[in-house]
Length: 574
Image (cartoon, helix red, strand yellow):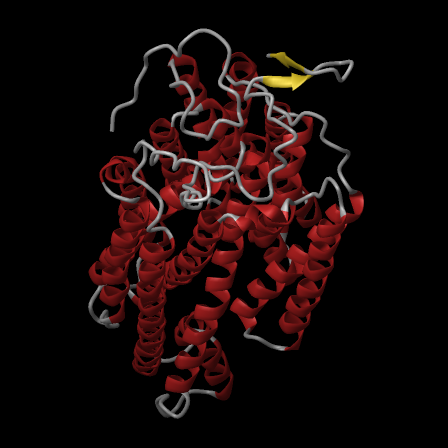
């Protein structure tokens, strides 16, 4: 991968109705801006996993109930998922850089509030505020990248760097948390975000362009409420289903969310300036890329949960050691993301994505043959292959989503990409987690050793974590047999879930090759236009950079640096 530091050509920007990828090449300022955008992306991802290791210290200090502890862990992800669509579209309207800087300030303040919280309620509120602020960061950074990098090849590299930072943050979260907890109190895990956000606030205005859509209407409060009412219950129901199975409460939450999603969609079709432009789904590349992101992250998210539990509960590794075993996963994901742009210059992106998913299938099959006594090597290798193979999918599919829309709708497209990722992870954890739990309970039933008290049997039949806790209270011989039975049952559930994941991703590889087969290699010259007339053929199949059917051709985009003139007469160059 080569980053071109050559200054961008001087002069006016290309008209944003020109297909994305046909504009000027980025220079030193844009690459510096990318580095500034990468830092909050890493912190955003890090905060999703950094608190897991801190829960014992947090519980001893604040004394939360079981329900409060669940909300402390989950509210951050809930708020991000719920507000992504709103914030993505809001950035298009008020200014993407402005929204990013507002979000960075709030994220820094919320990090301090969470770090020094003195009660469970204060920590829940701090984490909720972190989630709302975090929802401004992901779509703002991604849509700004689409404005800064007009050349298709450079944009693919920039998005790959962005993706690799996000995945690195997810991977190193437990390790960073473990190191901080060795020396400081539980609240210290929130503090690394503060200097990063201060740096963004200081440097961002100097190196990041401003962009907002000309003549955008006011946000529709009813649409905002309907989007929250649709997404939040759905994510809540999926998370509860992952922990307790698809009982009445999770099912009611998911159905209620689906009803509000339908109402939200109907309202968007009636509005002149919708919160979410559903016309974007008219583009074939856009639809296919979102589907690939949703299904692939569902399979990967579900198996990642099994991998982390296997390392701690089956292989019996301490949390920090388990985190170290997962570092290759983050490195592999970043590597897969970074090699994707160069591969996509030589081959069609759909084929690169399909090839990466084939590697991921090998990872799922490796996890499918891991045994309870095989140690951490097979599982760690399998999940590393899964994330390496998913790297090109994540980078190129995200690039296709953002690149298939005109720049005026980049924020909305970015928010949909991030929402698909959040929903995919929640869906995978719920469905594959429930499948693994069903297999676990089926294997446990009737196979426990004699002499196990009824209370221990109940905990063991619930989860492997319950079996581990119950075994500590039993005589060594009985406890060891109980643990062996539970570990074998859990591993069997993981094996079945991995086989299902392999089948899903193998099918997705075929879909990628077929549905995205028309997309040309990055930077390839478009086909020559056919002559007009009665013998002329229809237009060539649009690539990822062409205007979507939902875009209004009567409203040309003012350019990536454009902001609205105070009198409304036209854009000013920022």
